[in-house]
Image (cartoon, rainbow, N blue to C red; front, side, top):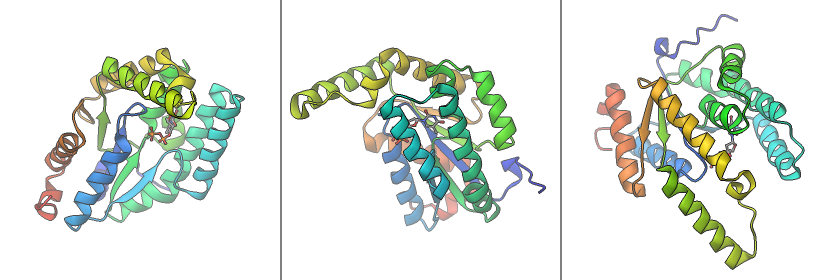
Length: 233
Ligand code: TYD
Protein backbone atom coordinates (compact mmCIF):
# COMPACT_ATOMS: atom_id res chain seq x y z
CA UNK A 1 0.00 0.00 0.00
CA UNK A 2 1.54 3.27 -1.06
CA UNK A 3 0.05 5.98 1.09
CA UNK A 4 1.44 9.47 1.12
CA UNK A 5 0.67 10.76 4.56
CA UNK A 6 1.41 14.38 3.87
CA UNK A 7 -2.06 15.89 4.10
CA UNK A 8 -0.93 19.01 2.25
CA UNK A 9 -1.01 16.87 -0.89
CA UNK A 10 -4.59 15.84 -0.20
CA UNK A 11 -7.66 17.57 -1.47
CA UNK A 12 -9.43 17.22 1.88
CA UNK A 13 -9.01 19.26 5.04
CA UNK A 14 -7.96 17.61 8.30
CA UNK A 15 -8.70 19.61 11.45
CA UNK A 16 -8.30 18.34 15.00
CA UNK A 17 -9.67 19.75 18.25
CA UNK A 18 -7.69 19.49 21.45
CA UNK A 19 -7.87 20.64 25.02
CA UNK A 20 -7.97 19.44 28.61
CA UNK A 21 -11.12 17.87 30.04
CA UNK A 22 -13.77 20.52 30.52
CA UNK A 23 -12.41 22.86 27.84
CA UNK A 24 -15.70 22.77 25.92
CA UNK A 25 -14.13 21.10 22.90
CA UNK A 26 -17.01 18.79 22.10
CA UNK A 27 -19.52 21.68 22.09
CA UNK A 28 -17.28 23.72 19.82
CA UNK A 29 -16.85 20.91 17.30
CA UNK A 30 -20.62 20.58 17.08
CA UNK A 31 -21.00 24.33 16.54
CA UNK A 32 -18.36 24.44 13.81
CA UNK A 33 -19.94 21.41 12.15
CA UNK A 34 -23.34 23.18 12.21
CA UNK A 35 -21.87 26.31 10.61
CA UNK A 36 -20.17 24.31 7.90
CA UNK A 37 -23.32 22.32 7.20
CA UNK A 38 -25.47 25.40 6.93
CA UNK A 39 -22.98 26.69 4.38
CA UNK A 40 -23.27 23.48 2.37
CA UNK A 41 -20.09 21.76 3.58
CA UNK A 42 -20.80 18.40 5.22
CA UNK A 43 -17.88 17.55 7.52
CA UNK A 44 -16.85 14.05 8.59
CA UNK A 45 -16.90 13.95 12.39
CA UNK A 46 -15.01 11.54 14.59
CA UNK A 47 -13.69 11.23 18.09
CA UNK A 48 -10.67 9.47 19.54
CA UNK A 49 -10.79 7.05 21.05
CA UNK A 50 -13.86 5.77 19.24
CA UNK A 51 -15.84 6.17 16.03
CA UNK A 52 -14.82 2.89 14.34
CA UNK A 53 -16.29 -0.42 15.52
CA UNK A 54 -12.95 -1.42 17.00
CA UNK A 55 -12.38 2.09 18.36
CA UNK A 56 -15.63 2.12 20.30
CA UNK A 57 -14.70 -1.24 21.84
CA UNK A 58 -11.29 0.18 22.76
CA UNK A 59 -13.01 3.23 24.28
CA UNK A 60 -15.31 1.06 26.40
CA UNK A 61 -12.38 -1.12 27.50
CA UNK A 62 -10.35 1.94 28.46
CA UNK A 63 -13.14 3.51 30.45
CA UNK A 64 -13.87 0.24 32.28
CA UNK A 65 -10.22 -0.48 32.99
CA UNK A 66 -9.73 3.05 34.25
CA UNK A 67 -12.71 2.71 36.54
CA UNK A 68 -11.30 -0.56 37.83
CA UNK A 69 -7.88 1.07 38.15
CA UNK A 70 -6.05 -1.81 36.53
CA UNK A 71 -4.73 -0.31 33.32
CA UNK A 72 -1.00 0.25 32.98
CA UNK A 73 0.07 3.59 31.51
CA UNK A 74 1.85 1.88 28.60
CA UNK A 75 -1.19 -0.26 27.85
CA UNK A 76 -3.31 2.86 27.80
CA UNK A 77 -0.90 4.48 25.34
CA UNK A 78 -0.85 1.39 23.13
CA UNK A 79 -4.65 1.27 23.02
CA UNK A 80 -4.87 4.96 22.11
CA UNK A 81 -2.60 4.33 19.14
CA UNK A 82 -4.36 1.13 18.12
CA UNK A 83 -7.56 3.17 18.03
CA UNK A 84 -5.88 5.96 16.07
CA UNK A 85 -4.30 3.66 13.48
CA UNK A 86 -7.69 2.09 12.84
CA UNK A 87 -9.53 5.38 12.46
CA UNK A 88 -6.85 6.70 10.09
CA UNK A 89 -7.28 3.61 7.96
CA UNK A 90 -11.05 3.36 8.14
CA UNK A 91 -12.23 6.98 8.29
CA UNK A 92 -9.62 9.73 7.96
CA UNK A 93 -7.64 8.75 4.86
CA UNK A 94 -10.68 7.70 2.82
CA UNK A 95 -12.48 10.95 3.77
CA UNK A 96 -9.47 13.10 2.84
CA UNK A 97 -9.04 11.26 -0.43
CA UNK A 98 -12.67 12.11 -1.09
CA UNK A 99 -12.00 15.81 -0.55
CA UNK A 100 -13.99 15.97 2.70
CA UNK A 101 -13.46 18.24 5.69
CA UNK A 102 -12.55 15.99 8.65
CA UNK A 103 -13.16 17.29 12.19
CA UNK A 104 -11.51 15.03 14.73
CA UNK A 105 -12.18 15.30 18.47
CA UNK A 106 -8.68 14.60 19.91
CA UNK A 107 -5.66 13.14 18.13
CA UNK A 108 -1.97 12.51 18.88
CA UNK A 109 -1.60 15.75 20.86
CA UNK A 110 -3.96 14.17 23.43
CA UNK A 111 -1.60 11.20 23.78
CA UNK A 112 1.34 13.55 24.18
CA UNK A 113 -0.50 15.61 26.81
CA UNK A 114 -2.23 12.80 28.75
CA UNK A 115 0.07 9.79 28.44
CA UNK A 116 3.31 11.63 27.64
CA UNK A 117 3.01 14.36 30.28
CA UNK A 118 0.07 13.38 32.50
CA UNK A 119 1.24 9.78 33.00
CA UNK A 120 4.89 10.72 32.60
CA UNK A 121 5.70 8.43 29.67
CA UNK A 122 7.51 11.20 27.82
CA UNK A 123 6.78 13.06 24.60
CA UNK A 124 9.55 11.28 22.64
CA UNK A 125 7.93 7.89 23.09
CA UNK A 126 4.56 9.23 21.98
CA UNK A 127 5.98 10.98 18.93
CA UNK A 128 7.93 7.86 17.95
CA UNK A 129 4.69 5.86 18.07
CA UNK A 130 3.01 8.53 15.99
CA UNK A 131 5.66 8.08 13.30
CA UNK A 132 5.50 4.32 13.47
CA UNK A 133 1.75 3.78 13.67
CA UNK A 134 0.24 6.86 12.02
CA UNK A 135 3.00 7.37 9.45
CA UNK A 136 3.30 10.84 10.92
CA UNK A 137 -0.10 11.91 9.54
CA UNK A 138 -0.67 15.40 10.92
CA UNK A 139 -3.70 17.64 10.69
CA UNK A 140 -3.31 20.86 8.72
CA UNK A 141 -4.89 22.72 11.62
CA UNK A 142 -5.34 21.99 15.31
CA UNK A 143 -7.74 24.10 17.33
CA UNK A 144 -6.49 24.03 20.91
CA UNK A 145 -9.00 25.17 23.50
CA UNK A 146 -6.79 26.08 26.41
CA UNK A 147 -8.50 27.87 29.27
CA UNK A 148 -6.50 29.72 31.87
CA UNK A 149 -5.22 26.95 34.15
CA UNK A 150 -6.17 28.57 37.45
CA UNK A 151 -9.65 29.49 36.22
CA UNK A 152 -10.20 25.95 34.90
CA UNK A 153 -9.12 24.39 38.19
CA UNK A 154 -11.40 26.70 40.08
CA UNK A 155 -14.34 25.71 37.85
CA UNK A 156 -13.52 22.02 38.31
CA UNK A 157 -13.38 22.42 42.09
CA UNK A 158 -16.70 24.24 42.10
CA UNK A 159 -18.24 21.53 39.91
CA UNK A 160 -16.96 18.81 42.23
CA UNK A 161 -18.30 20.61 45.24
CA UNK A 162 -21.67 20.96 43.50
CA UNK A 163 -21.73 17.25 42.56
CA UNK A 164 -20.86 16.25 46.09
CA UNK A 165 -23.63 18.40 47.52
CA UNK A 166 -26.32 17.48 45.01
CA UNK A 167 -25.54 13.83 44.18
CA UNK A 168 -23.26 12.82 47.01
CA UNK A 169 -20.69 11.76 44.41
CA UNK A 170 -17.05 12.60 44.16
CA UNK A 171 -16.17 10.69 41.06
CA UNK A 172 -15.47 13.23 38.37
CA UNK A 173 -12.58 12.58 36.06
CA UNK A 174 -10.85 15.60 37.52
CA UNK A 175 -11.02 14.12 41.01
CA UNK A 176 -9.83 10.76 39.73
CA UNK A 177 -6.71 12.26 38.13
CA UNK A 178 -6.05 15.14 40.45
CA UNK A 179 -4.84 18.66 40.10
CA UNK A 180 -1.18 17.86 39.42
CA UNK A 181 -2.18 15.65 36.49
CA UNK A 182 -4.37 18.42 35.09
CA UNK A 183 -1.50 20.89 35.34
CA UNK A 184 0.87 18.54 33.51
CA UNK A 185 -1.67 18.06 30.71
CA UNK A 186 -2.22 21.80 30.48
CA UNK A 187 1.45 22.70 30.24
CA UNK A 188 2.10 19.95 27.70
CA UNK A 189 -0.59 21.47 25.49
CA UNK A 190 0.96 24.92 25.88
CA UNK A 191 4.36 23.46 24.93
CA UNK A 192 2.95 21.77 21.82
CA UNK A 193 1.38 25.07 20.73
CA UNK A 194 4.70 26.82 21.18
CA UNK A 195 6.59 24.15 19.30
CA UNK A 196 4.21 24.07 16.33
CA UNK A 197 2.70 27.52 15.87
CA UNK A 198 1.94 26.94 12.18
CA UNK A 199 -0.36 24.01 12.96
CA UNK A 200 -1.76 24.78 16.40
CA UNK A 201 -4.07 27.73 17.03
CA UNK A 202 -4.75 28.35 20.70
CA UNK A 203 -8.09 29.78 21.75
CA UNK A 204 -8.42 30.91 25.34
CA UNK A 205 -11.30 31.57 27.70
CA UNK A 206 -14.56 33.10 26.56
CA UNK A 207 -18.26 32.34 26.43
CA UNK A 208 -19.47 29.66 24.06
CA UNK A 209 -20.45 32.06 21.27
CA UNK A 210 -17.25 34.09 21.45
CA UNK A 211 -15.13 30.97 21.21
CA UNK A 212 -17.28 29.62 18.37
CA UNK A 213 -16.77 32.85 16.42
CA UNK A 214 -13.00 32.64 16.93
CA UNK A 215 -12.95 29.02 15.82
CA UNK A 216 -14.86 29.91 12.64
CA UNK A 217 -12.53 32.83 11.95
CA UNK A 218 -9.43 30.66 12.33
CA UNK A 219 -10.83 27.95 10.07
CA UNK A 220 -11.91 30.34 7.35
CA UNK A 221 -8.65 32.25 7.47
CA UNK A 222 -6.64 29.06 7.17
CA UNK A 223 -8.76 27.56 4.41
CA UNK A 224 -9.75 30.39 2.09
CA UNK A 225 -11.21 27.82 -0.32
CA UNK A 226 -13.93 27.18 2.23
CA UNK A 227 -14.77 30.88 2.41
CA UNK A 228 -16.85 30.89 -0.72
CA UNK A 229 -18.78 27.84 0.29
CA UNK A 230 -19.12 29.16 3.83
CA UNK A 231 -19.70 32.82 3.06
CA UNK A 232 -22.85 32.86 5.15
CA UNK A 233 -21.19 31.23 8.20
P1 TYD B 1 -13.64 12.40 25.93
O1 TYD B 1 -15.03 11.93 26.09
O2 TYD B 1 -13.14 12.70 24.57
O3 TYD B 1 -13.39 13.62 26.87
P2 TYD B 1 -13.72 15.09 26.51
O4 TYD B 1 -15.17 15.12 26.11
O5 TYD B 1 -13.42 15.84 27.77
O6 TYD B 1 -12.79 15.42 25.39
O7 TYD B 1 -12.75 11.32 26.65
C1 TYD B 1 -11.53 11.03 26.21
C2 TYD B 1 -10.61 10.88 27.38
O8 TYD B 1 -9.51 10.12 26.94
C3 TYD B 1 -10.09 12.21 27.88
O9 TYD B 1 -9.97 12.19 29.29
C4 TYD B 1 -8.70 12.28 27.29
C5 TYD B 1 -8.32 10.85 27.16
N1 TYD B 1 -7.38 10.58 26.07
C6 TYD B 1 -6.09 10.24 26.39
O10 TYD B 1 -5.74 10.15 27.58
N2 TYD B 1 -5.18 9.99 25.38
C7 TYD B 1 -5.52 10.06 24.07
O11 TYD B 1 -4.69 9.83 23.18
C8 TYD B 1 -6.87 10.42 23.75
C9 TYD B 1 -7.30 10.48 22.32
C10 TYD B 1 -7.78 10.65 24.77
